[in-house]
Length: 89
Image 1 (cartoon, helix red, strand yellow):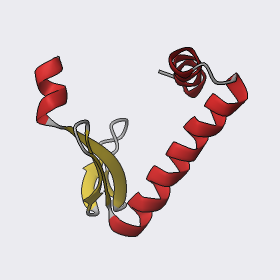
Image 2 (spheres, helix red, strand yellow):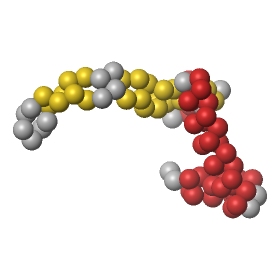
Image 3 (cartoon, helix red, strand yellow):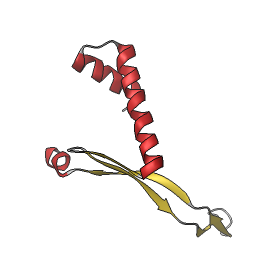
Image 4 (cartoon, one colour):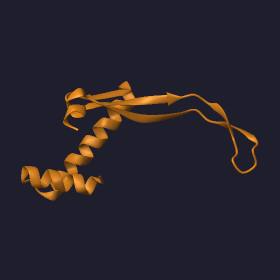
């Protein structure tokens, strides 16, 4: 789902303007990003938890040549659904 589709869904559900809905979506994404950078977790009770996952550097292989290469350490965001959300599926 894109931010525009989400903003349209918010607009339809609340009756606000599209500009207000887009601002709300941007505000939520900024808040999630800020809290993840600071705390590493962002729980939304009844929905789930976003958390930062760290991956250390590791050895890999170039698929074309087969030569070993070092893959740098990285971070990614993961999501774990709350039991209520899982049950609703």
